[in-house]
Length: 325
Ligand code: GYE
Image (cartoon, rainbow, N blue to C red; front, side, top):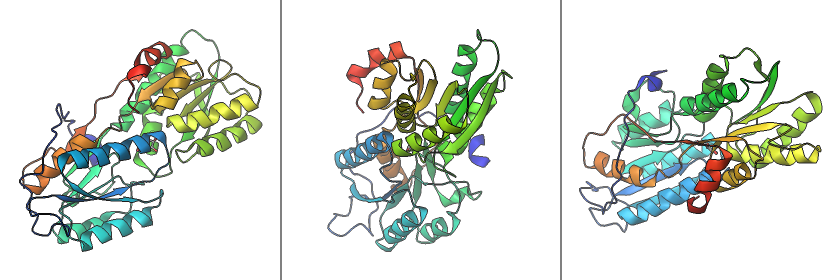
């Protein structure tokens, strides 16, 4: 896929900017000429990560003096398309969105392009081959996140003999983080033939989804050794299901998740989760910085990758007191 071949550019700094340089002839009603108006089509409110991401975008817009028009698509692509069309109609200066799924965006993105409204992808990517349909993509490298999760498991299982049965709780079907976290994880665990994904299903990135799917796995799959959940929330749901089945999460069944939000980190510090790969939701300042540049007609990198780390239980204990989200 084209986007995976981009050279990663790390945005080292974020600027707290006051609105400047915006060519806002078309600006939102009520905004002065140099105020940037941004239409932001959010995925939903499915997880702790998403809540932190929304807060970051709203706070950064406020700090940058950006007039933010915000919509929540409740994890439905058609709602996001509607929101984008309404932003086009309102002639906002820039549209930013986090596509719920990868496919099916070309038509609406073409409409934005024809209206001369630049689009910034944030958090999740689209699979459009026409990269002129958006100006930049700001977010994590999800394949890398999956790899980090798999590499930890390969190392953790090195001393054990025999098969390791993994069940996977996938994110939203068709979403970039679900596709890529699966791909990265599978690539990493291929290093050890004892490691096998015996069940894999979507829990839609929600706690209730993770719990429900895990309950089914526990009923129909003997000898589960490991849960790999594409986000903390599904891992937390799985913990509830495991405890209800009389097993000890983190011991009888090991758990690996992605995100590192506070609730996930707390479960990690308590030993109920064994390893978390971080995914940073605090994209707001970088997004406002990119938006100001795009609106001012400046060049921006085609891809901006966020920097991330991983956490063991010990590291979670250390990080928790200062964790913002
Ligand atoms: O990991 C998950 C959320 O797109 C990176 O979406 C995001 C993912 C995040 O619902 O918790």
